[in-house]
Length: 324
Ligand code: ADE
Ligand code: ZN
Image 1 (cartoon, rainbow, N blue to C red):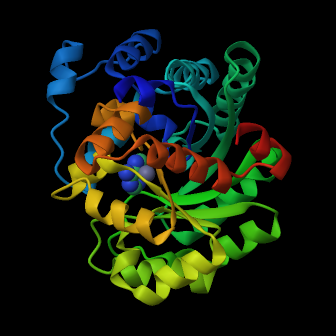
Image 2: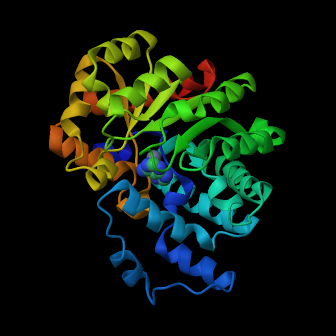
Image 3: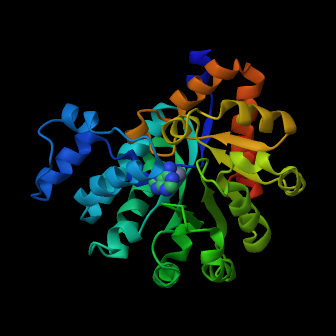
């Protein structure tokens, strides 16, 4: 089964590019930029990845990305992920990036996006992996900063498929960004947002995302099972959920495999993704293997997960059909 999963053509839709920054590249970028790291070795750095909640993860994640400074840094980051994606037979990826995590520490927006974009173009030409960018707003910053970031992105609109919302969800509900999302929609962006698995008010956040904001899909979203009415809306609209089993295991007590199974059985378009693979020590293949192992998924079900992903991908119909 592992070989079957390894060979399966894949589509990854929930992947934070800053979460693909492996310790080896962190050391290389620190050296290049003349920065000191608080660890002597790669092993020491990995040993410090001891998070048990979203907020403890986010602290290490934001600290780690401070080595990213220049356009070639962002190019190398994205190229490293896309090389790994090609090895795992990922044919298409939608990649989140967090511009505010960089602009807030003085790295210009255009440095970030130009580096990422150049890697996407080179990866398509050299590796045959297609990818698009999704710009995420950080929900623990003010909505006005998200709006300013949206405005800053407009000259690069052709390079960005849509917008997302990530970072710390506690106290930062979807409704906080309703105006930003409305403007993003008017500008032609597609819409997604994180509705994390470890939230007390998860079902209400999902309701706001779907009914008040009208997102096209939801990142995570397993908690939709808490409200049968929302399950029906998602089914009626054919909306997709981008689930991340191994990531779930870090921020809750389990991969939420039973919930994922239930959603699959209900016919919801669930997909399997890696989220922050450098920190959770698992790329998409390892996530599929872990889920298969827990749920005893058969080959047909594994193929269906990838079909779901290509089906909900933000690609023109013709291109999707070429993958399906
Ligand atoms: N930013 C990067 N990874 C994230 C995650 N798993 N949840 C919320 N925000 C994130
Ligand atoms: Zn995520």
